[in-house]
Image (cartoon, rainbow, N blue to C red; front, side, top):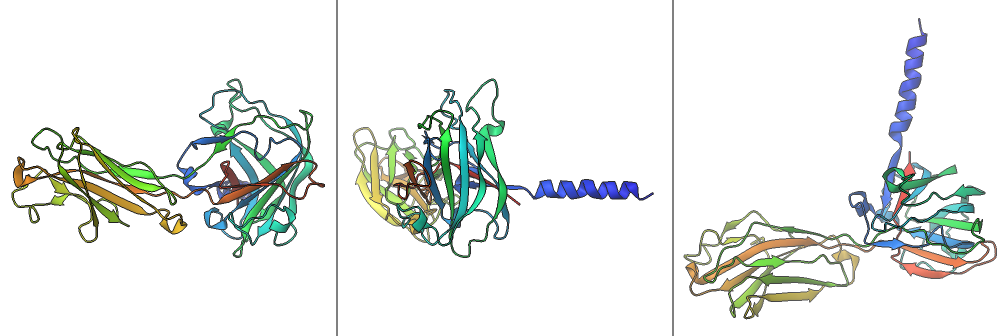
Length: 357
């Protein structure tokens, strides 16, 4: 009489364990972005006999403190179409903690650890799967390494270090091409409703490219009135808002000419359109992550003496600035137990997968 409830309890227990598995993607923006703009041709697993150390700033590792990391994974580059053959690796993986971050990480492997790391895999044979093999495609383009010793993720203000130590390969220990998806910054652009027509046609249309700290914010406009005074309304720290009437500011303006930049705080940049009705504005964004994930909105206004109210407006848009991956890789060729220093690649980030529970 008790067998069914006991069996059911076992099933529910197993189901609960499966459900507790979670996958954290680094950088976290790539949880929603299926493909990075670059590929990593041989880091971290295809440099041949080598030592490769990856440091991930904890601020971007979406794993609850106290969870166990059970698997490490990567995803194949989706833009590339060529087949990359895998290799067999004599592999050891170590994990640990660092008081350094992606900017201060040193080129000395051991000095980057705050305390001795722990071995979570091997040394043992691991066979890398073929990438982009039409005959044996990877599920979701991903592959994983099951850790033989789960790693307790308890950062306590420290940053995560994962070190891949390759003692030999089936290719004779030489580097090989194994293109993994590689991330960069993610910056989204959103546009509002269309602007209004000017006397010569229109309506004017703005364009805003993605950007990040250390680059420039820019807005360009086309299809505006020709050789006309132009003004760019810029909202710092706020996105576009629902359209509102500009009639209280410009008497007689067309009802289709609506404001879309937050009227409670903005700056104005001046300019003039060309003979084709084009203009552009730009300014530098400080190279500081405080300006990352920051909204900048803009909308252009033009003087047009033959339009209602003598003013016309473009559409509006905003950009959410991106942040370069807060990670750094130190790598070198050679026997892992012998080499002590490597070359440093800041912001270099093959998209990494951390399965945890």
